[in-house]
Image (cartoon, rainbow, N blue to C red):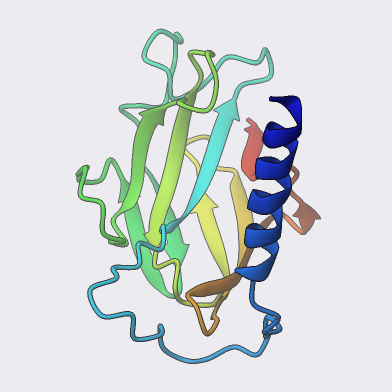
Length: 178
């Protein structure tokens, strides 16, 4: 019995090896997605996710924080277009540059509230600045760098990074103290 199990395992392993192709993966980008018939590519939009806290660490976009900024007016300028807070919120999936909106954290069990700016089309390349004027009169610049390339079989590579006032942001979430 033991020998037949080993034999079946070896046979399965050999079949697995023979089914692989030796065709190299290309890193050369192509402009459009490959034609895969009915295949639908869902490329997620790019968002700038921010946690804005006061000097004591209280989240300024959490309704339970005294003196929060939920009812305050502020703005961001992106590619020459101004976006005001509060802005219309929607749950539509397709990338729509709608400005600011708020979502609670779904990345962890924390109750942290995220201020988001977006959505930027994830298939486009972005190398631009987001200028934010806060209710306290301060200003910040968030640089957005995003690249995306199609490969022969589908999405090949993508990379997103942010800089806050020139300093690299670790972990993809921009954390600001006001």
